[in-house]
Image (cartoon, rainbow, N blue to C red; front, side):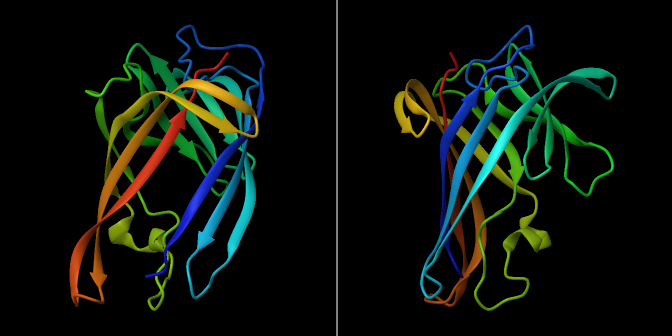
Length: 208
C-alpha cells in the first residue's frame, strides 16, 4: 500500500457580516469569512514526492434548503456545504459537488463540532480514505473502492486550551479533535487481512 500524509495550515481569515443568532466561535458561519489553507500531500518511497496546493473556503451566507434556513460554505474547487448551528453544535445537512445540479441532503445531520467541547463528547460520522492509495491494485485510490466509501469514524475531544501557530498568526484556546476509523487491509508481512487505524486530527481555534 502507498501511504502519505496531508498537512494543512491556515493562511488567511477575512471577516464579513450576517451571521446566525447562535454563532459557534470555533466554527463561525458568518457571511464573508474566508480561510485559505496550504495543503501538502507527502508520498512515501518509492514515489518520494510532495504535492503542494491551496484550498480556500468561504462562507456565502444564509439560504433555504429543504424548507429550513442553512448556512452555505463554498470551496474554490466548487464544492458546497450547507450547515446549521444550534445549542448542540454545528452540523452539516447537505453538500454539492461541481457535477451535482443541486445539493444532496445527508441521510442525517453530520456533527462538525459539538457545542460542549469536553472529554465526554463523543460522536460518529461516515467518511472515506480520501488520500490513501494502493501500489498494485486498480483503482489505486481507496476512495473509489465501494467497501471504503462509508466508513464510520469515531470522534472525541483529545485536548483543549491548545496554542496553534499558522501563517495567519498565533492562536490560543484551541481545541484538538481526534477521529479514528478502522480499515481492513492486507498485510504482506503477515500474509493476512488486519485492521489498520486511520486517524484524523483537527484543530479549531475561537474566532475573534
